[in-house]
Length: 240
Image 1: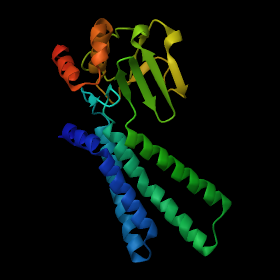
Image 2: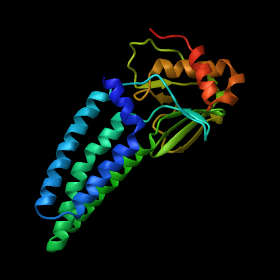
Image 3: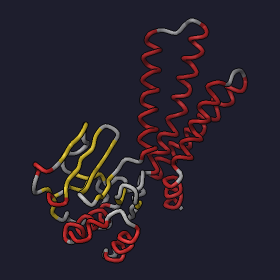
Image 4: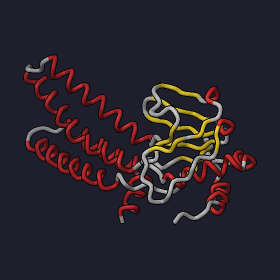
């Protein structure tokens, strides 16, 4: 049940986030009793979203999303980031409402402005992170990991097959066995110098896929196609 809910949130994350932003916008322009009701509703939704985010945080799907336009196989944007962003919109909306009220009353201080701007910037970063679904992507040229402030790209030629952790392993990172560090490209502020995050995908599945393409370079050019993804799933050993 939780797995299906997480999958639905991932697939419709743009709709979920758009509805949350719409509610914040409507609440910001509302006034009087309507504003009070809107704030309470938004806070309740935020609390429910944060609780659900904690529950779903342990879900790690063993599949990729096929991006034919790029092309790439990408880890699905984690559902908990969508819910966390949605949960943060409630407090952020409260801060915006308080700032607008203080501005109308002429009591807005510099400290309030700085604090409220920080809340808004953080909310924007969280929504952007959830909207784009940053994670791990497999390209014909190599493995790329992105997050809001940076990226890490490792060509296939610089990799050895990673060790496949047992199914019960709940590690947060999968170490990459990099043989040619000079070929690794880093931009911004990468979160890890040589590991892939596995809090958003099954670590064993990710390791098996990378190992498959390290061992079978003839299939790399087809990465990003639906036919290649179906062939890959059929070729991977079952985990138990």
